[in-house]
Length: 96
Image 1 (cartoon, rainbow, N blue to C red):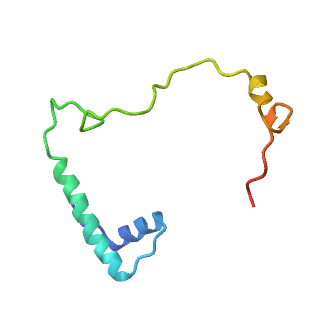
Image 2: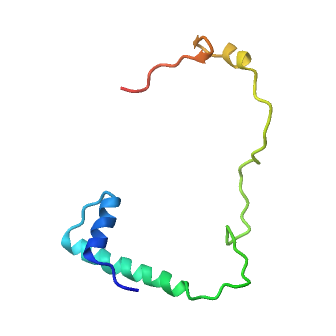
Image 3: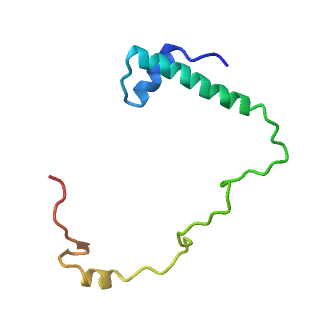
């Protein structure tokens, strides 16, 4: 893999909204080139016959399953609103 150019690093820094000094830019160029080199070496690994995976462990989520259900009746919900405007709940403004 070709090393990153100073222009590549400048472009990446602009995308990330960061300003780098000349020294930081050169350090970042070397580090990013090394990181991309590792990915290049990984791309040479033969993965034929290896199932893809989303997780490396048997961890399970604590979230409930996303299942459809019958929504609450709008009037029942609005009946509990402290202030309403027609079919909407009125709240105090939060933008200063």
